[in-house]
Length: 277
Picture (tube, rainbow, N blue to C red):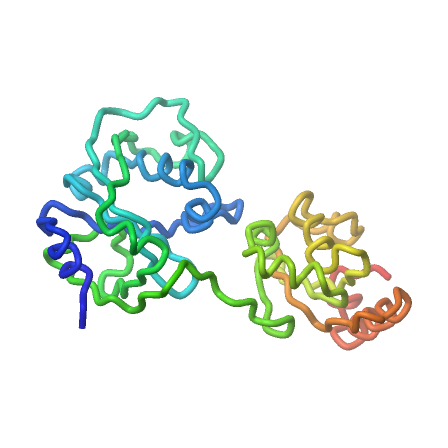
């Protein structure tokens, strides 16, 4: 079995001078390092270049092999030269969280000069490893942890759309979904369910407009309630959204609303939820 340290050594790296970084934090706004890398590479590289001083010893190496963590995997996104150059500017805004870095930690922040290098560039977005033992440790040493290579794809591939029945996501994630998923959700109308693990409530709604499910859910992502009276009165929450029933393309507005009312009765979302009509 080919392992990642073997690949580093084949590329003439001394494993002891490399650190493996697995970026997996999820911000309250729903953004993850994976989405940042996928959608805005300069912002990802800026995010990576500022680290807490408590990580200084662990990050002391000439090179960083960077990985992000989409659902169910660890994806290679490049080898970077790395050199600590001093303390971060207190006004620095964290690109992942969208707030000043000093508000995220009580520790001091270090700034690193990083630059992606050409070595192993052909594997970026294609190579998946198994992080294995020490999953909570986001910085590891390849000379001590020779990670198995789980998969090598021909091109960068995102997960296939799971289908309407199996689709589940948080409202905060909707605007960051892969383009193929967005297309599928725009093309379908029907009845959906919002649930909150925080408030223990549910809400049944319908998507009847041209934007389909995606268009309807965007309004929740923007203001948290989409104009619904019940949701306005509830404690704010990052609702989980799923599809109860996708309507046929020929279904009329009245037919979709009738199905919505049926699901409200089935789930008793008026009596045990936030529906008000």
